[in-house]
Length: 211
Picture (tube, rainbow, N blue to C red):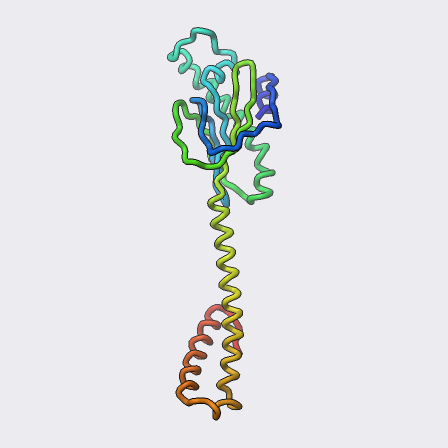
């Protein structure tokens, strides 16, 4: 974000990279510019600032400016903020997708006023310019990633269960085979054969090879 502001507006902004505020996402200022992304994870890239700061970045803010006059400039500074964020996110995409795979990014949007957001983890770094402070937030909801991990674990559990079932099938088939049949209760043998048929069908339908 700092580089984008410098390249697009020619302004230098101080960044204290040693300070990163980790907290549930809660905008502290009334202007929220965000790009939402979805995929294995979901979240938002956000910049959060005062409207006066936004106007000051493009040189249209003056002391005593009324709310109506400030609102008339939203098209100008709002468009700039969306473009700055869009450029910065484009620079960040490769690193994020190295970890989480391909993500879908939504167009940037600007909100003016209060945002009542859910409690999702985020990290915030503040840029300090002559026009005011700009919070840069990465909001990251790992619920989708956790769900995917749970799905993988369940699939692995089912694979193990299928392997164990195949072993039990072979042991049971051997126990009721010709060499042991005369030593067993015919009723038990009949029950075992019924179970064998059921397990055989289940294993075959799942793609397992059974003898």
